[in-house]
Amino acid sequence: MAVTVFIVDDDAQFRDLARRILTSWGYQPEGEAGGVTEALQKMAGSFPEVALVDIGLPDGSGLELSTVLAGDPWRMRVILISSDGDAISSQEAMEAGAVAFIPKAEMSSALLHSIIGDGYSR
Image (cartoon, rainbow, N blue to C red; front, top):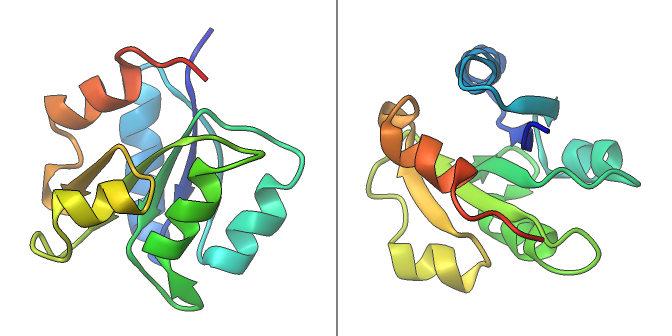
């Protein structure tokens, strides 16, 4: 069974690119949202295994959303992303409950693929 991934980014073109990359790797994009509020509404009652979350969202912080999604009831693996490669440190990502921070320029990298696919257990 494919790992399910929810994408949160305010750029619709980026969400489309991410969805295509994830699908090509055999993952199942379960949904997408352009902001914090929309993400929480769309994920209500669903439990994707991984969330790919942009740090800068129009209605809140991806760091704050990461904290929510990594906790109960979701307990998702959150991967924070940003077009600014220096947006946050790995330590800040971990403190927000994320398993990693990856710059958008590295979206198609083997590193992202391995973070999503390796050793997942809820």
